[in-house]
Length: 71
Length: 370
Image 1 (cartoon, chains in turn yellow, brown):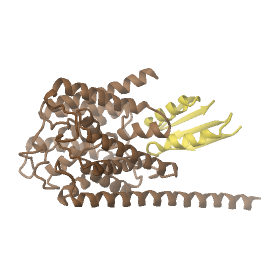
Image 2 (tube, helix red, strand yellow; image 1 turned 120 degrees about the vertical axis):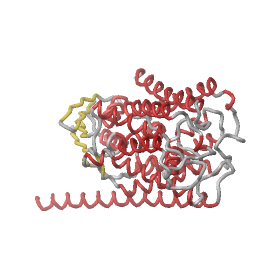
Image 3 (cartoon, one colour; image 1 turned 30 degrees about the vertical axis):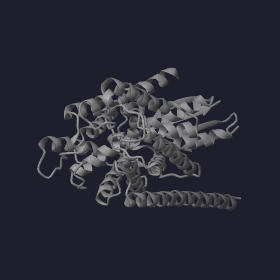
Image 4 (cartoon, chains in turn brown, green; image 1 turned 90 degrees about the horizontal axis):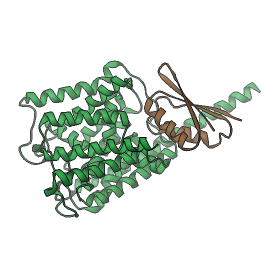
């Protein structure tokens, strides 16, 4: 069980999705938390993760968003 | 899933229909909306180049920016930000424009040309997809333009203010602004219609984030066809719109197409250059324009690069014409490939070096602790 935290704040399209994709590759039963600061990144990551069979929870934290992704 | 697919097709559909309507009301054929051509026309209108046939302050562009700005403000998406490799973005924007002007149109116009039977756009499309594929390889190797951070409010308002200034200059028409008397620059829908169309498209694209590069990139990279449905919508409804509103201009073939040439190799290479640069920049010219309205100053720099590219393209005779591509344009495209690929490898090398040194530092730290 491994938990990973990815900081994709300030990254332009499609880097947050690629970073998430790489992190999810060996996640097993663990959790990946992704920090982003743009709603477009939230939408893109969420769509990618859900289409890949993961569950996504989004928390808004002042100016940032934290996506919690797990199987 | 299905509703999002429908939303994207509808978004694209509105853009396609509006493009056909703008042609009906005076915009050049197959150029209802063309982001590269319109920035080129604005550069000409401001006198940054002196190609007399492509000078006009296109209100559609102001509309895209202000529509995006207004929508972003309304929805809380507006945020002044920047500082992610501005110089590299400028250079990539410059060569994106060179590629687009050798093909004669941005990726959006490529779809519109396709929707009016211009088969040269098929060659361009293949080039665009190949360029995007090459750009993706750089992304996979770790290419990044780095993080952006918050920017001063004043920086975020650059593009919206410029957009207003363009409309003011268009209406005031002072003598230092150039307006084409013949050629594509002289063909324009009434300004209010153009501005309204731009506002609608700008607002819509701010919400849906549609991007011509993103459509192909995501389909190839992560098998996500979300944006691709938007592109299909543009094509399908521009085709429908052209058949309804501009039937006399509809023609399938390679020869005699409006504001197009059939130098196949250069149509291919021009769009391939546009494809690589658009992926490395994180979005096509249309998307950059929308981002610039949302306060993204990196997109503003990209647009300045596009405009500089357009100015040079016409001052140095790099841009193609319906007669074909001149020697200067061919050289510029080749130089563009060399520069862009060199930037790609150089950024990848720096990223790898930084990662290695960070790893070494981490391991060093571990040893010390142990």
